Amino acid sequence: MSDTTKTATLTVDGKDYELPIHSPTTGPDVIDIRKLYAQADVFTYDPGFTSTASCDSTITFIDGDKGELLHRGYPIDQLAGKSHYLEVCYLLLYGELPTAEELEDFEQRVTTHTMLHEQMKNFFSGFRRDAHPMAIMVGVVGAMSAFYHDSTDISDPWQREVASIRLIAKMPTIAAWAYKYSIGQPMVYPRNDCNYATNFLRMCFSVPAEDYHPDPILSRAMDRIFTLHADHEQNASTSTVRLASSSGANPFACIAAGIACLWGPAHGGANQACLEMLREIGTPNRIPEYIERAKDKNDPFRLMGFGHRVYKNFDPRAKVMKESADEVLELLGVDNNPTLQVAKELERVALEDPYFSEKKLYPNVDFYSGIILDAMGFPTSMFTPIFALSRTVGWISQWKEMIGDPQNKIGRPRQLYLGETARDYIDIENR
Ligand code: CMC
Image (tube, rainbow, N blue to C red; front, side, top):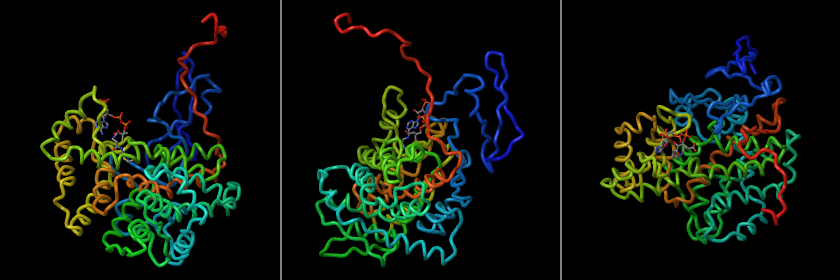
């Protein structure tokens, strides 16, 4: 953390407290309140952490006003355009772009860990066929702690490294097998001669009778979806992973906690919810009705795929995703599909409506990702598992950073208690 000469003064009941200010390499300064409770006997209050930095980090930076997303300093549009997912994984995990030799070694390590312990296959068949693949992923990833004991000791850097590679490598296999199980098809084993994205597509769409060879444009689009979701600093699921791991829990348990958090429709579940919403709208003439519902304070309906806690100008990931959607839909000859027509018109209408512009609500990454995945042949229930497998590297990088940080303490938020004060127990016959 940076040394500081700047301070902030907080006055509580007429008494001043001087608080250190730390300056980041970029972004807003932070006021250090760690000693405030000990000194002034007050807590700070920030539900939803809208103004609170929970850690220091060197991995990802977002400037929500500028619509900027940097991984280790590199802009996301450059990474999505020039790099590829496994190279971005290396960058997130180790801090620098790899040399050709380092990349080859990393790809080799990931590729040779893609198989799951054969006994884990039986684990899948314990689920109902109609289970949501996210439910299966939470269970199976949590169960990895029971299969890979030799990489659960978080105090051993080597075991941490092995767990990291295992998670990144095996997540596509887990997601693809969850899908195969849900449609009653045999699970397809990973192959070492395919790249990460192609391997995933193969495991989802091959059957024993016919191998699936995705068009390079589809593999590239899949890889880009992985890249665009790889990390996003201290979002809800990443903070969940950090909080879970702050107690010393093993990495598989922590990533399972992240997957559970990601599932919600306000976070990773938005991609599924968005496509379902577009289908429910059905035709462009019904858009005004849904726009009115989104604006109505008494209606819980929100435009899924719109708005973001941090981006208040545009989501740079959505821009790249839109380009990818155009490429994929052109390749597949579905550029006039009804869902896409509704999406385009909804975006146009919402962006012209003062409600959305005044609240700075713009399409986010999930507005277009679902359209691409749908065109590729994925059911909506697979959208969030794909987000989860992409985000695994972000969770792991943040987890590694946290474990290696000497300031790491168990996460323990305080509260503003508004319940009853101490009172005496009343015997049941007197209540
Ligand atoms: N449709 C209609 N109104 C909205 C929407 C929306 N999608 N998003 C926010 N608002 C309104 C909200 O009602 C509130 O209005 P008011 O100030 O009058 O009460 C105002 O905008 C601010 O909203 P908020 O809920 O306080 O903002 P937040 O930062 O807590 O929430 C969000 C961010 C992403 C949860 C929210 O915008 C949302 O629910 N969007 C839809 C779900 C979605 O697409 N999520 C994916 C996010 S990107 C992928 C990821 O990182 O997981």
